[in-house]
Image (tube, rainbow, N blue to C red; front, side, top):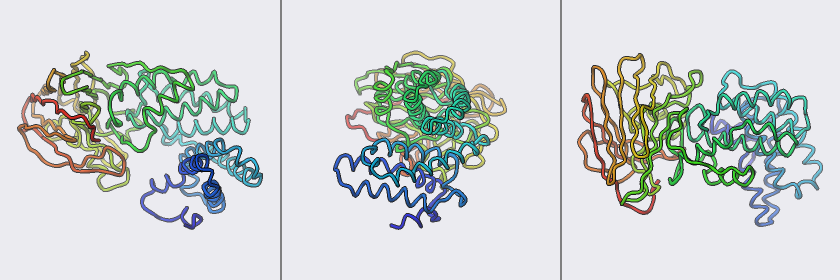
Length: 453
């Protein structure tokens, strides 16, 4: 494979090319070298870095020098260097070359922070800037970057630990970012600044959302195979920071409620979204999933949302629609006006009205304030009860997507694409109730031991 040509190949989507330039695959090569001692892994990793430096000079620009891509790639390079320090320190020419490129990327990033996009992109930029400032011993830049980074953490990480774009996947990505930054700051003598990173709250949030289940909950843009796993993140938090997570049934700031119950069918968990869709100025990752929920039985998903599948695909907007989620549609209208892959106009909003260990009630105010829907979910001994009621004129349709074990129920039954991880989907069954002012359904829990994602 000629990497020098591949860096600029017009392959697949822009996001695919972003991932090519992240260089995250250097770390599996490093691990293979450490595990097996085969120098070919080391040589291949070095050749990839060398070819990128040759093929992607700063003046050429493009994807390689996008600020977000730089923010991701420098973490891969620095982790690669740290893992293979003993093996690389004997190659002075390579170390000098990678350092010179890192310095150039550092300067470029500092001049191109994504203040136009803000949200998770800007946080990634500031994290990378702080890490590079520590790496190069640039105290002046670090003293400028740290207040900005802490201000963004304060804004973007809610007090309940959820990231303000309200995606469990991005919450895990940001948690990893902040732990990386905290470790570097501590090792560089600036550890006190990491106290502002809300690591305890973020671990509490992750633990509460994912305790006892087998995959990332699918709310807003979300899916597996992107962020690190729950277990890996919580292990790092415990070993590096002494964080022991605590369970919270209500995440007050984000509007997520978690119900759990031991039943004859096994451990049943419901995650219910009764919050706002996201920050008003950064709605790109929003789905029409207000009042939606996912139900897991013995860790395996049963009633689900459809996920995301891909960012740059013809199916993108279909996955964002109301009926691609286990939620309520009012008067045949989408909950939010998702008019482009990362654009939202008018939107509805939700709120938690009441919550206890096995019962939760939330409300949806339709965009424009035209009407209100109240949804109540009850974990009973043998099954799940869902009651939906429209306050105002019109009718509602309640959709339920099943990953497996489809119960008998009234309503329209069809197939819908279900994507529990990015880039992969399969057909699942969806039941949509007949239009009415209110609905009440009861689904008996399935009984199975092996979780199916």
